[in-house]
Length: 480
Image (cartoon, rainbow, N blue to C red; front, side):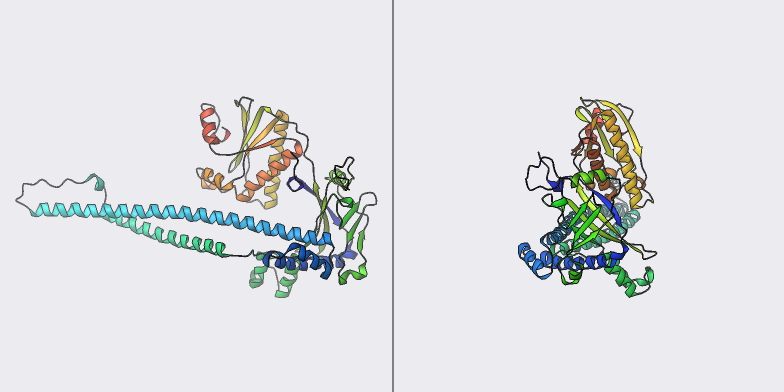
C-alpha cells in the first residue's frame, strides 16, 4: 500500500543565513506575510470564506503568487485543524472530569445518608433504652443493640458528616465550574487564535513582573514574535521541489521568489543568496530529495520529493541580536527493514520512571527482559526530549541486534494515567502527557530510520494476559 506524502516521515535541515545586509528586507518580507496570514485567518476560518474566491482575490489585490497563497492557506488551515483537535481533546477531558466528579458526589451523598441513618438508629435505640428504664416494673428485657450501631458514636458520625458535607460543597462547586466550561466550549462557534502567543500578549498587563521596561518594548517584542517565520509549501512537480524557494546545490545559491506587492517592486522578482552550504547532518538525504527522479511514474515530476521551506527569525533575548535561518523539510523514505516478526518480538511498556523491555520467541514464550530507568524531574523540555531520544536509540539498537520487531501500546494517555494511579504519586507525576506523546513520536521516528518494524497494539487486557501467562517468573508486572 502506497503511503500518502502527508503521512510519510519528514525531516528538517537548517541553515543560518549570514547575510546581515538583507536582514531589513527579510524583516519586511516576514511582516508582509504575517499581516496576510492574520487576514486570511479571518477571511478563511472566522468568516468561512470560499478558498477559490479568496485565492483569486489575494493574488489580484495583495500581490501574491498562487504558490505563496497556497502556502498561507495550508498554514492557516493546519492551525485551525490543530485547534479543533485541541478543543476536541479538551471537551473529552472536561466530560470525563464531569463524569468522575459526578460519581464522587453521588458516593459522598450516599455516605452522608448512611451516616444520618446510623445516627437515627442510635437515637431510636437510645429512646428504646430510656423507655425501658422508665418502665421499672416491667419484666421486658433490655432492648438488644442492633449490629448496625455497634461501636458507633453520634459525635464521631456528626463530625464525619460535617467533613463530608464540606467536601461535597467543594465538589459541587468544582462540578459547576467544569460544566460552565463545557457549556462555553459547546456554545463557541468560532476558533480563537492569538498569533504571537497568549502568554506574551498577557505580559503587557504585568510589565512589572516581566523583563519589559515599557509597553513600547513589549509591543516590539510581540510584533517580532507574530512575524517570526514564513512557510513556503513545496511540490515534486516544481523545479527543485519548490516554486517559491529553490536551492542549487552546485552553485550553492538560494533563489526566493518575492511577492508582486508594491513594497518589493524595487527589489525585482527574486532575492538571491549565495555561498550557502547546508550542514552535513541530513545533507545527503536533502540532496537526494532535490534530485530529479530516475524513473518517475509521473512525467511532470521534477524532484524526488517536495521540499517545503520555512524562513525563521530568532532574536537573542539578552542582546536583542537577530539571526535568520532557512529550514528545509522533506520526505525521508523508510529504511529497509532489518527485523522480522516471525522469529519473535520485543515489547516495551512505558511507565512513570522506566521502560520495561521484554523479548519473546516466535511462540510468545518469555526469553529475556530488562529495565531502562529515567528521571524527568527538574529537566527542561529540550533535556527531556534529548533523554527520550537516547532511550529510543538504545531500544532501536537492541531490536536490531535481536532482529525482532518492536511492539508498543497505542497512544492513549488517558488510559495510561488510569494504569499509573496504582503507583505512588511521586513516581506517576514524572510522566506527563507531553513526555508520553514524545516517547511515541521518538519511537516511531527512530524505528523507521533504523529499519525496525513498529507494531502498535491495543493496551486492553495486556497486563492481565501477561500476569497469567508469565506467572511464576522472577520479573516485575511491567515486564510481563
